[in-house]
Image (cartoon, rainbow, N blue to C red; front, top):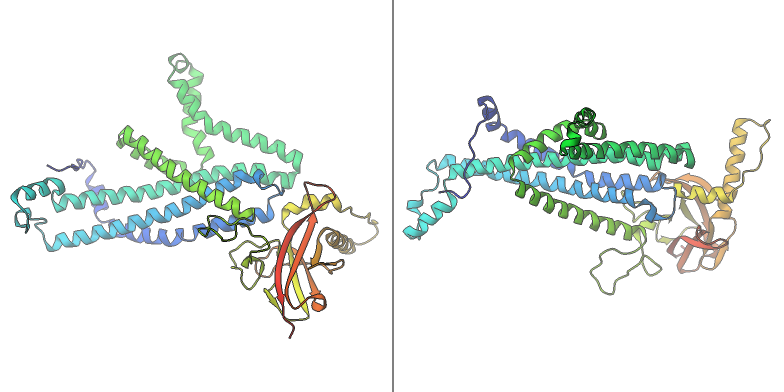
Length: 452
C-alpha cells in the first residue's frame, strides 16, 4: 500500500498527450525565466534610485515608508521567482533523469532482489516507496504544481505592483505636476476609488452570506458587478489568468492545508520584506546594516572610507552620493567636485532663492541665461563648501550632469594650492530644514593629496 496514492486522471485524451510532451518545453521556459528573472533585483534597485533622485520631495525619509515597503516587497518577490524557477528546473531535470533510468531498467525497483535486506525490511521498503513508475508520475505532478506556482507568484506580484502604480502616481507624482494642493485633492479621489474597488468584493461577499441582505436585488446586482469587474479594474490583464490558476489550486487543496500553506508563505514573505526594509532604511540613514564584526564601524561617519563617494571605486549600479570626487588620491592642480541635486532640495532652494524681476523686453534665450545665472548664485549661497578648515566662498559652480549616473547637479574645480600633503577632508554644508539659521552636513569626502 502506498502512502501517497495517485489521483485518478480524468483529463481529456488531447490534454493528457499534450502534457506528456510538454516537459522539454517546461525546461526551456524555466531556463529562460531564470535568465530573465536574474535581472529583476537590479531593475528593482534602479527603480528605487530613480524614485529617490527624481520624485522624493521631502528630506524626511520616514514619510516615504510606503514606497520603501513596496520596494522591499518587489525585491523579495524577485528573488522568490528566481528560487521557484530554479527549483522547478532542478526537479524537472531530475524527473528526466529518473525517466531515463526507468527506460534502462523497465521493471523498476525489484524489491525481492535488494541485497543486504531481510524479508521484513523489503516489505517495509515496498510499502514506503512503492513502484518507480508511480514515483515518476508523482514527481511529474509536483513539477507541474511548482511550475504553476511560479507563474501564480509572478501574476499576483504583477497585479499588486500594477495596483500600487496607481496609488504611487496618485500620492507622489500628481503633486509634482499639479502642485501640492490640487495634486493632494486629485490623489485622494483616485486613492478612494481604488480602495473602494479593492474592498467592494469583500463587502458584497459578506452581504451575500446574510439572508436578509442577499434577498435584496440591488445587493445581488452589486455583487455580480464586483465579481465580474472590480478586481479586473484594479489588476487589469493579469486578473483572468491569475484567477484560473488560483481557483484550480484552492478548489483541490484541503482547506486546512491551504490555510497552513498561506500562513507559512505569508510569514516567509513578510519576514523577507521586513528584513529588506530594515536593511534599506539603515543604508539610507548612513548606518552599516547587519555587520558581523563587533568592532567594525556602525556608521558611515568620519572613520569610514566609503567607496561610493569616489568615481573610480563606485559601481555604475550604485546610487550617486550627495558629494563625489574622481578618486581618493589627487595629484593634479585641480580637484573636480560634483554635488548631486535631487528633487528633494527643490523645497529648500525655493525658500531661499528669490528670482529677480526680468524685463519683458529681453529675448527668451537671454531670459533663460539670466535665470540660470541667478540659480547658480543661489547654489553658491546654498552649498557651503570647505576643505579642512578653509571655507571656499566662490567655488565657481557650474551646472553639470554626472557622466556615468546621468544625475543633474553642480560641479566645481578646486585649486590644490590650499591642500595639505596627505589626508584632507572636503565638506559640503546646506541649510537645515529642521533648525532655522543652522547648517547640516550634506556630504563629506576624505581624500589624499600627493603633488607630483
